[in-house]
Image (cartoon, rainbow, N blue to C red; front, top):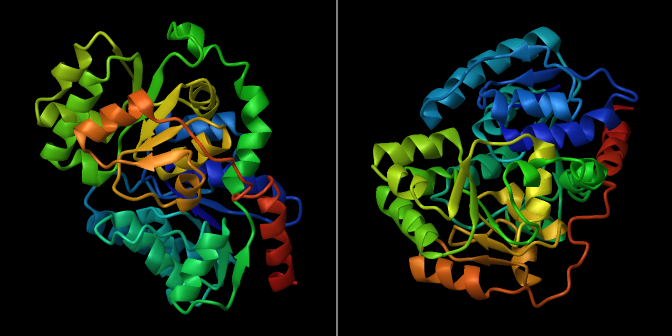
Amino acid sequence: MSVVGARPQFIKCAALTRELRTEYNEVIVHTGQHYDFDLSGVFFDQLDIPKPKYNLGVGSGTHGYQIGQMLMAIEEVLSKEKPDLTLVYGDTNSALAGALAASKLHILLGHIEAGVRTGDRSIPEEINRTLTDHCSDLLFCPTKSSVNYLNKENISSGVYLTGDVMVDILLRQRGVAEKSSILQSLRLTSKQYLLVTVHRAGNTDDPERLKNLVDALCQIERTIVFSIHPRTEEALRKYQLYDKISENKEIKIIKPLGYLDFLKLMNHAEKVVTDSGGMQKEAYILKVPCITLLETSAWPETVEDGWNVAVGVDIEKIVNMVRNFEPTGEQKEDFGKGEACKNVKRIIDSMLK
């Protein structure tokens, strides 16, 4: 059983489900954490993800409410389906709820993207991924640093370095994405715009941090494509910041895109400015410089190799890095060569057979 609920999980599931279904019966459970078509349905359509057998329809809410509702519903599904293995992905509330439900029922639990840490426990995702790892029997680590983080927490049993499944799907879909007409639709020229996303609760729910981000974007004086998450738009309107950003002629506000359109948009951007962990990795793999709107990155490899810089919400740093940051280091194959899904399946085979 695969438990998913948010955009990055759909992408990771799309990478792995094809490999798993060559031999196993997989049941997909969609928690409904992301329920908007632009953040959910379009990914199932474009990436040929099988339709979920269950959609729990949990929707929005506080962290406690979401996890509680998911936990009750996932437990009921697990008790009915009795899978040999439950897989959870990444660091969302859906991942933690799935992990807690499976471990409480003594069902073998695997965590895709295990061992990722920033060291900042004020970030909800940091709590989610840490607890999920400590519940898991099989920990599929994307990088050597994630293995090391687990060892520091005295987790060594069931730890496997597999590479990152997001590399697999990106390499598989990159050529397909180039057929997208998104640049023409938005009247953009390759490498002549910045791609911006903001969605982390720490940035959207704090009016001072959000105001800093808006002020920085308005000072950059570059063409900006701002792919706006529903929670971000709601926060901008709540704190009376939406008009300022929408009236700036340099900033194009767009709704979230499907995977293929977004992949092309990212591939042709001059730089990416984001607080998304997935985008930091994708930008690195695509060789697009990344400016991270957090104080630390969950992917130290991207920073150490000189392709990512974490600036938080400091206006001066954001503007300076957008104007002057240029990668200096050589990229390494820190996230693998696109064989992560095969590695994961091989490990699952050895456990279940």
